[in-house]
Image (cartoon, rainbow, N blue to C red; front, side, top):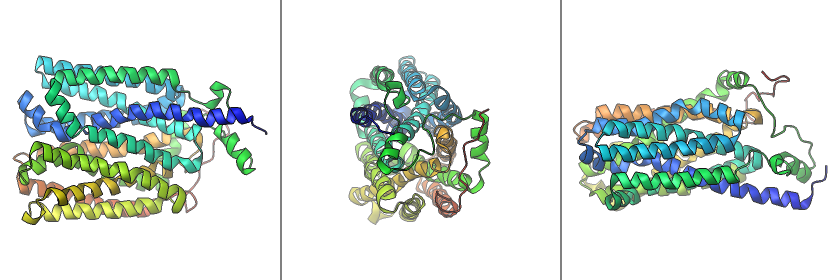
Amino acid sequence: MTIELEKKKRMLSYRWAIFAVLALAYFFVYFHRTTGGAISDTLQDFFGVGTASVALLASAYLYAYTLMQIPSGILTDKFGPRKAATIFIFLIAAGSILSAASAAADNFTLMIVGKFIIGIGAAVVYIPIMKVLAVWYRKNEFASMSGILLLVGNVGGIAAATPMVLLMDGLGIQNTYIFLAVVTVVIAGLCWLIVRNHPSEMELPGIEDIVSEETGEPVTESTSAKMGTVEALKMTFASGRNFWPLAIWFFFMYGTIMLWQASQAGSFYKSVYGFSAGDAGIMVTMVGVGMVCGCPIAGRLSDRYFHSRKKVILIGTLAYTCLWGVIWATAGKGHMDGIAIQGVINFLFGFFGGFFVVAYAQIKELYPIAMAGTSPAALNLFPFAGGAILITIAGFMISDKTLAEFQNVWLMAFLMMVAACVCAFLSVEKGSDEKIWPLPEEED
């Protein structure tokens, strides 16, 4: 098959416009996810609520995000990334309006409802992007593009720290969320106008045809293939070591990241080390800066150098676990109260924590491309369940914000990461001892 050069060029260039719009949406997905770590004290003071209530607010997003993962995969595979992402980005705007109304009404319960709705909307952004990457990009570009996406997301995480504090100080809670709602509506409109589910909708060649022409190898799997929902879910959850070690690893890995970045880090630095709100915000920001660097580097290492997903995950997990050991063992020590040394710890925390991005490439390659929405969505249940559950637990463990309370939570996180190292070792990747699932002959 010979592909027209102009059509090939247009396909390979237009995919960047699609990626740019969806990456911008993901910036705000991550922004909303991590705002709790820096503005928790502001919300406590404004609404007159306690630590457990603010922890519930942070976990409301994660519970909603977790509950929507399987529906997200189903909706993406059934309706396509364009329609699924557009509708749910509008829902993020609706949740932001409710959050603004909560400030006007001085009603913290309404703020929680708004955060929950934001979480529902945000849940159907990442999986459509994964589907777009699977359909519009080469297989050896997937991990690198995932890393770039997480880079953009973590810039959103950075914006959710010190910049969010400054924005809220300048505009107030109500106007801040109104501003976010307006921006989100604009992004939803761009999504509908620019995103396309498949190159064929623009009469352009599919990426599998381009790769076939470049390599001379026949097309073995079509990016337009479909699969029944029940069959896809059954293949995912019944696949043993293909799925479960990585799922449990992700529960601990991302759960502990959210525990620190989105919930307790800012409070820890102010309560134990006596940092100002601004300095504590900088510490949370450094986690995001670390991820901005770590995510694309991990993707690049996986695609170009190690040619392995599992090896990169193991390196990141071991280093990240060691950092939790340092945080636990040195908490409250006088020689560790400097902004510089804590900044380095937080940077490295985010850098190696960001290696989790490679897991999506690892899981995607074990299943047919028709499951490019369902299989990552099933995996994505676990990191956000981990974040929601660990943040909730920590909210009850840390009531008086004493050093001992924080140390107990940090020890819990460290032990969980030790278990995560074992799970990472037990996980499998394409080319090892996994079972590659074939596409069924007949759809449900």
